[in-house]
View (cartoon, rainbow, N blue to C red):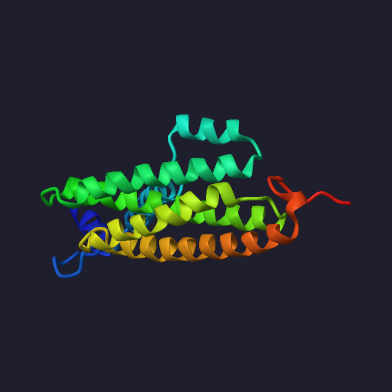
Length: 206
């Protein structure tokens, strides 16, 4: 009886011996773990980026004022100028504060908001000018405010945390200042020749 049992043990297939230098091959679950971790990182980065892109430069109260202004071009431009003045004052107040991470983050946010408002106002100016709305009452204060905004932005020393946002704000500020001055000059000449259209919100077909 002992001899057959020994023969059976000898003939049984041997289990492979794993050396510490040759670990067992990874299973599918082990291989998926790095991919799952990478997917989570990408999802988190996308969420942070989306929140940054969806940042609203105006408060709810300010948005309500814009909505109340309706399609009145002069009132809308006046409101945007007012809101930009407020943002510029905040940036100015932060300029001389002691450097800190909180200050840098706040400046980066404020500069991005400022740029967004500048660009939005520029888009509005193009639309209103194309339809020959009389923007002169609102353009004069805007052309006077724009150089002050640029002075505040240029007085702010750049730092890595917000230097890109600062440069973009200066570029947008320069573009808006040039745009407002150009439109004011064009409208001054236009309404000299079309006095009956002064004060209109859009050119009316005749």
